[in-house]
Amino acid sequence: GDSSEVQDQLRNVQQIQATVRVFAAILADGSVVTWGNHDHDDGGIYGMISSRVRDKLRNVQQIKAALFAFAAILADGSVVTWGNPMGGGDSSEVQDQLRNVQQIQATVRVFAAILADGSVVTWGNHDHDDGGIYGMISSRVRDKLRNVQQIKAALFAFAAILADGSVVTWGNPMGGGDSSEVQ
Image (tube, one colour):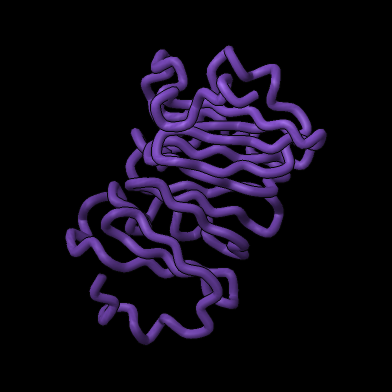
């Protein structure tokens, strides 16, 4: 990641996240700077900030990265996403649900957000019939994801800790998405 083009902007950095080709830094004023992918006309597909989201990235509190996309939690609990639409850069289908977001984690192609009420919203992989293999919430676990306190992500699966200390997993069974043997 050659940051020479943005080096003068990289002051008072609070957090850095990275996709496979782009870095994103949150500055103390809540703005975001990206660098890395030298194809600046990529439309943001690898995570460079596109004109579609540039003005929305204000008061950023946290950023999480997937393989080719970013998700940012703003101070008001809303979320702004950018990058590859097939890998989480387009959250338009769930945008109305992304309110009071407390935490975000990401597999390679899917983001999962915990809301203030303890529910979980996922977006990313557009193959909704994937059976949850990349981390989209499947019908197998949807009703179990209540009172979620924390989520962690592997490459293709998520694990959620519930308020009662139990764990719910979903995603690719070969990648940690099936914890039935230890439940």
